[in-house]
Length: 297
Length: 273
Image (cartoon, rainbow over all chains, first blue to last red; front, side):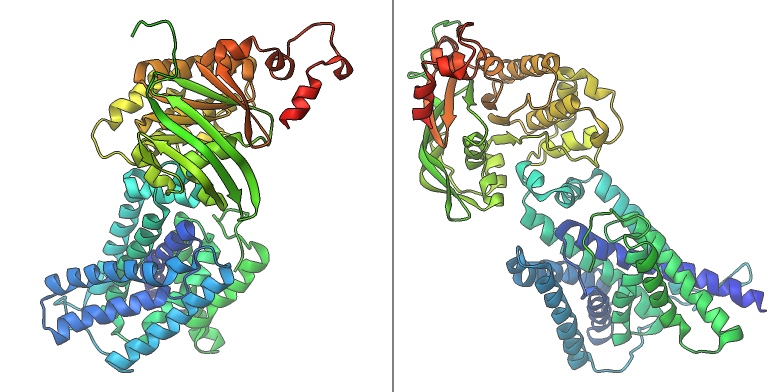
């Protein structure tokens, strides 16, 4: 058995897991406040990463200009998407809304492939050293940065929901829309804000992953991997999405390890989370932290 | 100021409801021509049995009707001279009317302070912290509760719901059955505080109640609703001394008339409905 490899994989799992956690938080944010199951979450990463790539490569902007511009673009994108596509769907059956987000996912994938082509493109190098050596483990600088960014986002989310006016309004809306309205909260604004924040933070994760793996349509696969994460953590729990993200991140790396050492099935890295998904749904359908009466999808 | 005689006709109405009809789901007619006036700075109560349309009247004013597929189809609701019927609830809160919904609808998974801060959602000024202290002055026992609001007792939740309304600094509060499910002693306490808030903050109140006795002792004027119409109205003293009111709402009347057979007014009650 190769212990060094095992530990390296676990560390990688934790790092990727925090990113899953961040994307899952974005998914939960939308689900909690608007009750929409967003199948287009992965496309937010995709669009964010491609936009940033275009800013840096096509328009040759420096990173510290192109990256904030990307976030501003995603903010507007999230609001426009909610107002134009999802606001008219308020009050429609949940399955119709799900179909709309699946449609959005396909539309954006095709659109992005049409604009940028189907090949993986590399980000210009942002960090001078590709990887650093910490206690004998090789960790890519971008991953290290992603860990820091993820932690900052998580802490940011905590303070946002605990202390900010809009954060409290979102929690109130998630608890009960009628009560929220009786307090003078405009549910329309809350919905738009939820989509905007979700788009911005997902794009952030998209850019970070794009820096490591290159930008390609494979990024949107993260959006599908969010499902095992949120179902493990509980569809409506922010804490659950972080814990679920870490668990799925480690799980897929462990599965990869066992497969490479003994099983030799191949591609366990991508499949294992979905085995886990099926098992969770059988024994704990509401996840580790979810509320019991939520709808199943 | 200091004028003991209450003459509602000469007082300026802050809210006037003129002959409104409310329809739910485009078919169910709930209010059939309600008119009432609320003078500025006073407490007016709206009494009546279950299903009379009291809560619907409040929701028509606060705009919450919209969230339940209801609509004001006729008549007008004027607040400070402006028509406010069928506006969005958040717009109405910004205009200065805050409804405390029936059944103390607090946000259970938030703390007391978070609930209070949400009450001030529409405000942008810096006085929010001071106002939280002010609410704690009215309801000292809330200050000791640091856990989630869902674990508060019924009375404390009602106090929180009222305190949250005060946080919005509204000109008018619509109170829907604050006495619901509270012990008589607590009802007395809550009504005392409602009166204090009315006098100290100058907030006008429209109070819906089942507990007619308590409400009339608190309010200056009262309306009695039955089946979507106003059946009776008058000053609190008039209503407290009204024979029908004594019979049906004030659990009093002649002591020897224990059975409905002996009720002279029974027919009159029928006519109201």
